[in-house]
Length: 613
Image (cartoon, rainbow, N blue to C red; front, side, top):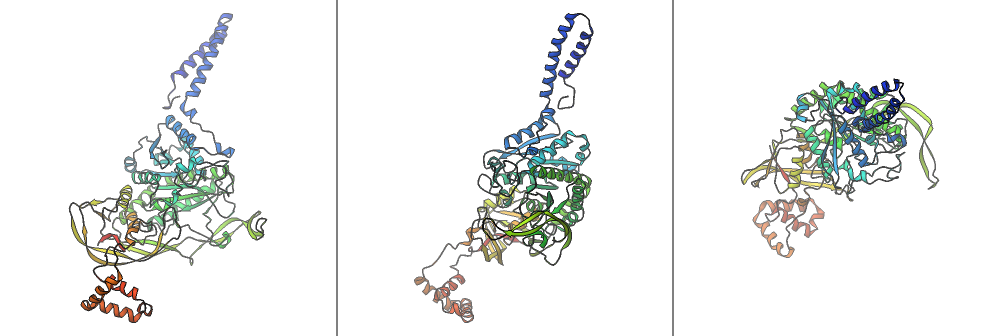
């Protein structure tokens, strides 16, 4: 049969010849039997030709993970190309070039053969997006997704599920890291024999890049999120950390950080359904083992994936988001099979909960479009916890053969099952009141481009004007001492606010806060946001003062200001009387007067994103 499920002409021909041979062999005349042997050779050739040219037979990939091997990038893409050729329900899309000059791909499985996100929404079908190889040294999902795709396409029992769900698979997201293969890129991991590297071609960790978007890969994946609006998203990984009995642990997007409707539905419905399915499939799971102290016995707590991470980013667009964490010390085959089981559990859950998933997201979006308050920063609530049953190994200590000091190890001969504390609640300690509009001057085009790439509507001004706007001044902030993913990240930001008349120019942007992307807008444009554009150094120019003075010249100007401006004089005298260090520091006194004067530039420390209430 060909890729459309029809019997090929070669197969019909071979069948006819075979029938003819049978009649020849029944003929007692020897000459007929000689002719028949020739025909036997011919029909064998035709059958072999039909076999090797059949796209669906060609598409049956080798399960390399069973030999402790994972696909290299060219072979992986070739397997998806075979599936594209073999099945009308499959389509491999080239998204564009990555930093390393190689293409990024998206593989779609659509039983209706539409491959159209708008039609998909109209048909009320869930879009499940699976991202693999963001850390190519953790390739469990790479091999599991290929096996998963084969089964969805070749096995008719999945037809009903695929009436409700469209599946998108990114075969290898970190293309540069995937090409950088070695036998020992992950020191703590049990196989495969050779795998890719965590950093991309620029040595960026792409799972820290979803706001700053330094990598071309990030821009391409953001395009997918904007275009396809995934309802459910999963990023496949391999864990680090403690030893325990589970092959798989799961990070669900932190439910308190999600909008309340989403968080409640994920915590009460989706998570229990997925965990139950994995248990039934023979792969019991634990929440991701993020230990409160050194070992899980101390309790574990939810990982807070802020928008720099893939799932924190997709959560800004109200997707139900997950990270699979297959256990590093289990065999590669066991990890792939556990990830494979999780993908099946996830697609089944999407199908069974289709209408609730879609309606919860739709209701959330409606409320968010008019929401006035947006949390910006969260803290773990250590006063609230659940008790869960955990299957671990006894933690022990012994003398290190390397250092001679006491070292931790887990005794796999001493498995246990006991109750531990699970801290899974967060509270926000900073929030922002959303304005009607933000105003972004066009000179900050790098920020404007990132907003546009994430589907944010920017309305350019049609003429020069000035407006009375709410402005923020950066009162205080801290910065990392060493670069983190190419940036000196800011944190603990404090601001003060006032109103000023601001000159704006034709082409500057108004950004209405009534959009699908409202959470993305607020959390990136408010400077106190944990992963705001300010935090990622996009506005660092305002932190440097550009104009200055010569002290011996400004002494006379300062004296005149104290005579002519009673407000400056009053503030100066109050500062001297209340601050003894200031009273004994002539340099600080002169600068204080300078800052109070019109000579001091108002743009210094003024955050250049303004607000229209």
